[in-house]
Image 1 (tube, rainbow over the protein chains, first blue to last red):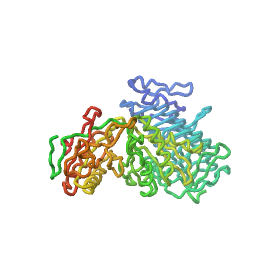
Image 2 (cartoon, chains in turn green, orange; image 1 turned 60 degrees about the vertical axis):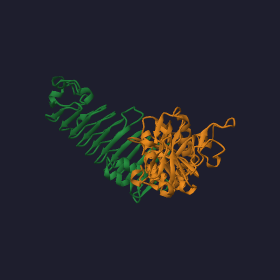
Image 3 (cartoon, chains in turn brown, red; image 1 turned 180 degrees about the vertical axis):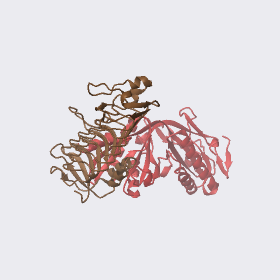
Image 4 (cartoon, chains in turn green, yellow; image 1 turned 135 degrees about the vertical axis):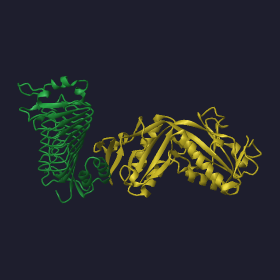
Length: 268
Length: 301
C-alpha cells in the first residue's frame, strides 16, 4: 500500500492510524476518510496523500516531512518504509515488524520500543528510544540502527534491546539507562552514561565521561565476540568497533554503578 | 540364533534393546582446544551409566572456531538421563563445578528444542549480584564475573524427550588384544556420527551387566553368561574360540542416530576380520519387553 504526499502538510500530522494492523480490512474510501489532523482544521488521508491500494502489511510513504508524527505507532508486524523524513515519535511502542526511514527522524524516534527493527538512514533527534513524559522505562526490546547522528539523551532510560548509532551523539548518551546495549561509532558527546544503572555502552569516542565512572581494566573478549555477532547483521561499523582495542569503565557510581562503558583506547 | 557371517565375522541374529531417555546438550568453548577438552572431559567424568552416576554424558563432536557462538574452539557435550528433574540437576551441577571453574571457559546451548532446561539461569547466582544479563535477538546470556574475567553462559538450553539410550554392540574376540582392537576401531568410526555419545571409558565397557543379583539391593551384577572365565561353571553364551568380550553402549538424540552409530561401528569391526578384530558380534537385549527401540544387527549390516 502506497501513500504519496501531495504537498507539504500545513499542520503536524498524527499518522498513527496508518499502520498495517489498522489498515487491514479497510477499502480505499474508508482509508481516505481517516483523520490525521492535530489541530481543529480537519485533515483526512485523502487530503494529504494519494493512496494506492496494495498489501496493507507493506506500507510505503512516498515523500516525508518533519511534520509526520507518530509514524508506525504500535507496529506489531509488517513493514513501513518512509521515503523521506519522519517527525516525532516514529515507531513509538513498536513491538514487531520492520520500519525504515530513508531520511531523518525527529525526537523520540523508537520511543519505548518493545520489539522489531527500526532503521533510520539519516539523523535522529533527541531521546532516541526514550520514554514519553511520565513513563518509567524507555526502550524495552528490539533493534534501532541510525546511520547518521543523534540528538541528546539517546537511549534514555533504556531497559533492553540494541541501539546502534553509526555517527555521533550529541550528549548524555545512555542517560539513566536501566540495561540494554547502546553503540555509538563516533563521538558520544558530553557525559555519556549519565546516571546509568546497568547496561553496556560501546563508544568510538568519549572525551568527557562523567567523573563518576571508574576505570575497570580490559575488555570482556568473549562477550565482545557475541556482541559482534549480534551487530554484524545490522551495522558493519559497529561490529568493527568491537574488535578495536577498548578500555572499560564502570558506572555511573552516582547511581547503581553496574553499567559498563567500553571506549576505543586513546579516545577517552 | 542363526548366525550371519561377514568377512569371516559371525554376526548374531539379535538386537540391541534401547530405552527412551531425556537428553540435553551444551557447547563448551575456551581459548584453546586443550582447555576445551579439559573442561569437557571433567564435565563428562563419572557419567558412564545412569545406574550409578545419575546421568550418561560424553563429547559428541569437536567444533571449529567458526562453528561456535564466540569464535573460539569448542565441543558439544550431550547428557542423557531418565527424568527431566535428574537431567536438570546434573546439568547445572556439572556445568557449575566443571565448566564455570575451568580457565577461560564459556558455555552455550547445545540443543535447539522448544522445551528448555536452565543453564546460566541457574548458575547466575554465583555472580552474587554482579552478574550481567544480556539479551540479543534470539540469545540470552549471563556474564558472571570470575577471577580470570567473565564466565559467559547462555540462559537455557534445549531438552528432548525423544532421545534413546542403550544401543549397544557386543564384540567377542579370540584374544583380549584383538577384541580391544575391534572395539577401538568401532569407537573411532562411531565418533564421526553426529548426535551420539558412547559414555563408558573411551567408549568401551568391559563389565557388561545383567539386571538383578543374588545379593539383595543390588540392581545390576556381572553378565555371567558373557564372562569367559565362568564357562563351564554356568550356562554360557560364548563359543569355544572366544577369549574376551567388550561392549559399546550408545546414547543418541534420535533412534536414527543410534542406528547410524551402530552401523558405523559394525562396519569398522567387521572390516578387521576375525583374526585382527572380533570373531563374533552380538547385541544385548532383555527379550524385547523392556525397551521400545529394537536395533536388529542384520538390518544394520
